[in-house]
Amino acid sequence: MEREIKKIVTPISKQEVSIKSWLTGGEKRIITNSLMKDVKFNPNDSKSMEFSGDILTKSQDVAIETIIVDIAGDSKDILKNILDMRSEDYDFIIDAINEITNGKKEEELKKE
Image 1 (cartoon, one colour):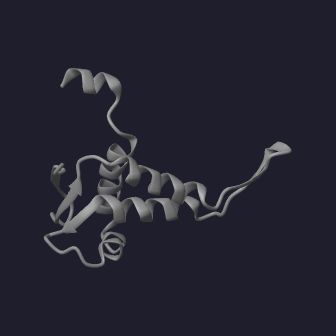
Image 2: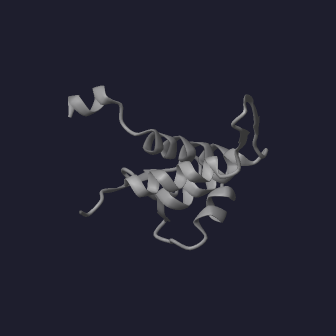
C-alpha cells in the first residue's frame, strides 16, 4: 500500500518539508522502543526508575528520521538539517511529527 506524503511549509524559512501522513505499526514500535531503551526499573521496587537525561531527545531524533521524507526535495542529513533550523521552524516540525506519532483520535476517524 502506498502511503500519502504530505507537504508542510515552515513558518520562518518557508522550506517545504515532506512528511509521512501516518505510521506503520513497525515504525511506531521503533519510536516507542527508542524511548524505552534507556529506561531502567527495579521490578521489586515500582517507585524506582532510572532514565537518561536525553531520553526524549533520542526519541525525537528517531521520530524525525522515521517521519520526515525530505526537506525541499533533499533526503540527505535530514536530522542535522532539522536541528540547524531556526527554533520556530524546528518547533513547527516537531508539532507536525507529534500529531502523527500520537495518531488520530477515534472521534476524528469517525468524522472521516
